[in-house]
Length: 484
Image (tube, rainbow, N blue to C red; front, side, top):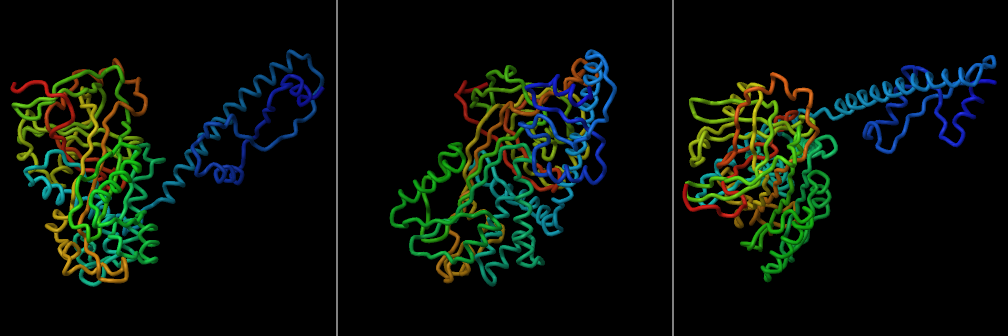
């Protein structure tokens, strides 16, 4: 009796498990080509089939001896198969990372958009009526790229100047911004929820040029629509309904009014939910006080955990800085908070890109006991006047704007730039690293208790771009008491 016939008898009614041999380099790369682009291993994959090998006939042995030999053989092939799959996954990830190497234009624009983040934040923070701030500089940069695509002459040149991209050729600007946004918003590799929808609204009298529609969709994933400027209520409802649908209901309202509806209106509708590199325990959540001011406090759910984080204490300026990795550590959420409750004005005067980089460079990876609000924010800004103050003066001026690439006529100007985001901070993340529990590494943790206003950034670790920058001053919650 040979081993194949014996195995057939032993595994009757079951899916056959083929005997494996060590694949050569060519077969390994053949399997790699099959696996690339998939999750390694696929959830529905029970095993990976290798090349069939015809077993050599053997002398007849007792059934029990053959069974033991086959069992041992199956164990060895299982181990070999697991090793091969792991190797394929590693090769696929390396090859994929090499394939996604960013161009020099995308790298330069990532750097420029990070500078834009701080300039735009400071301009917005000056407005006294503003409480919470939530902006995505890479999405703002992409919207500016779309404006440059629709602009001509000095209008287009001015957009490039705001992006600090004066020396870039137009094709490199659009290709680079498109590449950057695709890289940082890839949900599969980032393991973070980030829905981004963008639409350009024009008055019902405008006719969008076909070339512009195709190019803005290809580079910036922009949709296009028209609104009736004589019926503002209908226009507002159309914008809000589209935004709610685009974000799965997370962003129910972008605006209550549309000013100067005779111009072009940009709308960015986003939903961002970070996926922690190590999750919070869902049972370690309770109700705590968040101090908005000394006379106003709200109740918020607070998440608690102790883990290893990059932490820095700026004793001179009385500021705590904490970096929390997201997903597979491709990005981090950086929390910056004064020691105690105070206006953020003092901190914001210190807030520059260079200062943030200095804080992070000095951070030490150590045990931190963090308490973080489990909150959801919906924030909408009209960036039109803020971008104008940063130098975008022509595109927003009805008398000077030349956006004739959009419609073929000089009949449009940029009247509104609605930039709206919903943000959720929740417990979800990767499993904990249980190997450090009960060890010396978690002894004497530093307390990081987020119970008063703070500034935050979501920083991409590969491109060094800033995915989000903002502040939380007044989260949603029931009022607790009038004074401390």
